[in-house]
Length: 216
Image (tube, rainbow, N blue to C red; front, side, top):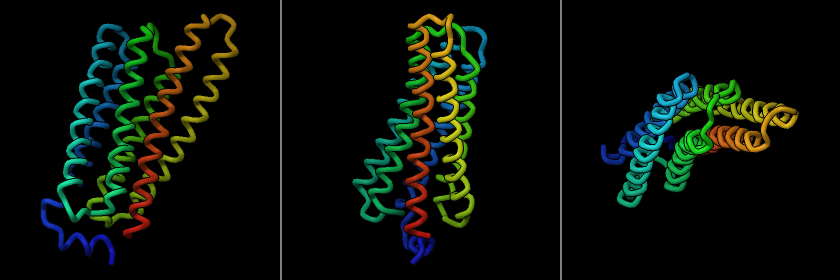
């Protein structure tokens, strides 16, 4: 029996997971949007203010994730496997954690000038999160499996793009004859943190793919 048929017998309370996951995705979209805005802000004071907003957004995301786990303990019937709900919530929480981790590094390292690599990473992250939003939203009714599959494939491609960007940026850093070694280490760590955000997006996409394989 497909997931659509199972959903017909669920009470409205069982649908709370969809709303909570969509709340998480709305929060992640805010985080990626603020990150892009911050990295394109010329005024450092304003940029730092925007970056600190990501801390509050990450805490908000933690609260929603905690609510998912609470509902998981309360509900006997769930829209899909309990393990998949837990895995998806954890993966999405990791996306938020590493996005804030990026902002925290920029703040802690007192980065004066944002470079094109950081901006390009932020765009890739935003695209990944946008596709994740599509995949998560479509889980509610499972009527558009192609949209879910396309989103997951797109995230995989973007993660590969982020890998390539990290490799090229790392080569460029270590080829520089003028960059201060400490600054080089800071930049490499920051690039790596941003690349990990895309890894976590791919992890979430893999969970979504496993769900549709089981229930479509």
